[in-house]
Length: 241
Image (tube, rainbow, N blue to C red; front, side):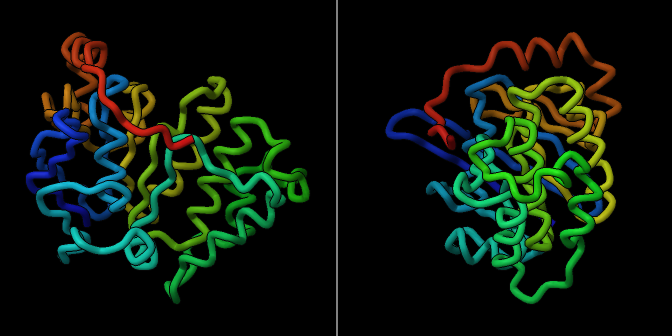
């Protein structure tokens, strides 16, 4: 569903992503792992065309390297960035409805009722404004809003960041159900939780793919994986909050 060929991202003289190749097959969830500053967020932002890059990006077999971000979203490439970006002046229900604007005639996969079923804590909060939500509630709204746009591929940037373990468990339980309906590209520092969801993973180290394989294979190499995830170089990735 998604292919990166020679993707390279630079900020001035600093190389953030160094000519990587990556595949996200249809019907699977793929993890992109690495320490803070390894190049993960830059990779997602390049795929979404939020920042310039070199190399090729193919979505469902078509090169989309030069398309605008809104065009990609309208084609079903949906990105949930780090920081959640809930509309603070809108209610939970209104935030979810905003997601429909990127649907572009695609058949609904998750409607409002489905989103509330995926995230039961949001049901009593339908009329609560975005600014009054906890971090976990905001993350649920951000994912729910993305699902309302009928994604053909869902990209998630650090969905567990800053959340309590019980909330991470709830979010990933919902994503396990989402995975059965669409491919996912998941960026995470938390390797264990990411590999519990995903079929395959890539480990970034200072902008290069240092390790890749099936989730089971990566999980069996804990010591090696921990060494890569613990020693990422600093990278000037712009804040998305």
